Amino acid sequence: MNTGTDYLLDLNARHSRTFIDLAMERRRYRGEHPTEIAALKCMDGRLNLPVMTRTAVGIIQPFRNLGGKFDLGWPFFQATLDHWAQYSIGRGRHCLIFVTYHFARGDIHRGCRGFNYDTNAARDTAIKLKNQFERIYGKGAVVPIVCGIETDLEALILHGEDGRVIDLAEVKEDLSGLELEGMLHSLYPSMPERIFKDMIPLVEGNIRHVRMIRASNRPIEDAEHKEWVLGVGRGFDWLHAINTAFIVGPFDPNLSDAIGTAAVLLKGNIDDGRVTPSGIVLMTSAAYREIGPECELAKEKARFLSKFALDVIKAKVPDLVPHLNILTGYTDLNTRKFEVLERLDKVSNPVAYKAA
Ligand SMILES: [Zn+2]
Image 1 (cartoon, rainbow, N blue to C red):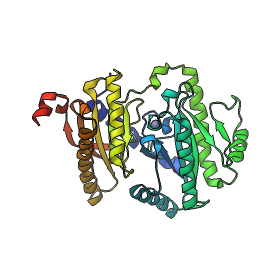
Image 2: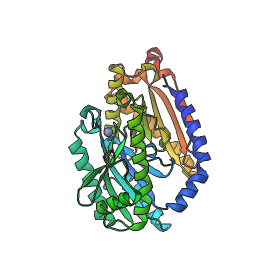
Image 3: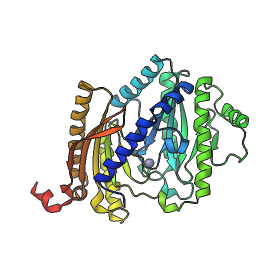
C-alpha cells in the first residue's frame, strides 16, 4: 500500500518534474487563456480539479479548507485572496473563482464530512460566499461562480446566475461546441467574454473526463475515505492523489478547530481499518516564490505551523499522536518542489514518544 513519508517525498519529486516539464505548455495555455482561475475547495483529497477538468497543474490556483468554508472577513484569507486578485488585475487579467461544495450522487455518506454530509448546507454556504465576493468586487474583473463537485462521476455541477443548475454528467453525448456555448451563455449571461472563453476548456475537459470515468466502471470503494495524511499549510497542489490527504489551509482564524476536525477524521480512518496505522503523516508546508526573506519566512512559518498542529492534536486527539510521522518543509511554487526541514519517523513508536 502506498503510504508513509518516503512515498510522499517520491510523489512530490515526480510531480515537481512533471510541473517543470509542463512550464512551456502552461505558458502557451496562459497566452491563449489569460484569465486567472482560483478554486475554493474542501480539503477532501478527492477534489482534484486539474484532473477533473483535464487542465495542466498550475493553471487553477487552489485554496483548501475544511468543508470549503471560507469567509472574506478572515484577515489572512482576505489578504491572500485580494493579493491574488490585485496581482491579476494589475497584469490586465480577469479572475474566475470557482466557489465549490461537494457531494456524491450514489450515497450521501460519500459526501462532505466537513458538513456532516449535509449537501444543502454545503451548497448554501457556497452561495453565501459567492454573494460575498460579488458584494466586494462588484460585477466585472472578478467573477465568482458556485460549482458543485460530484465525486462519484467527478462531474461539475454549474450553478447559473439565476440559480439554474447544470450537471455536466447529464449533458447529451453529441453536444456540439455551439450548443455548449449556448448553454453556458444562458447560465452566465453577464459573464465577461474573456472569462467565458477561458472557462469553456474546463467545462469541455470535465465533460470528457466524466465520460471516461463512466466508461472505466471503477469500483465505488475507490471513492471512500482512506486519507492518511494531515497536510497543514500551503503548496499542496501536487498532493492530490485520491484518498491521500486532508489539507488544512492556514486561512481559518479558528485554525485549531480545522486541524482538530481533520485529526478526528484521520483517527476514524485508523479505527475503521481503512488505512495502515504505521503510515500516518502530519505534513506541514509553507509556500514561497523568491529566495531571500520570503523563503526564510516560509521556513519559519512551516516550523511554527508544524508545532502548532502537533500541539492541537496532542490536546484534542491524543490517541492519534503515537501514529504520527512528522514531515515539515517548504515548497517552491516555481517548481512545486518540497524541501524537508524536519522529518521524524519515530513518533509511531509509542515508547519513543513517551520518552520524548
Ligand atoms: Zn468535504
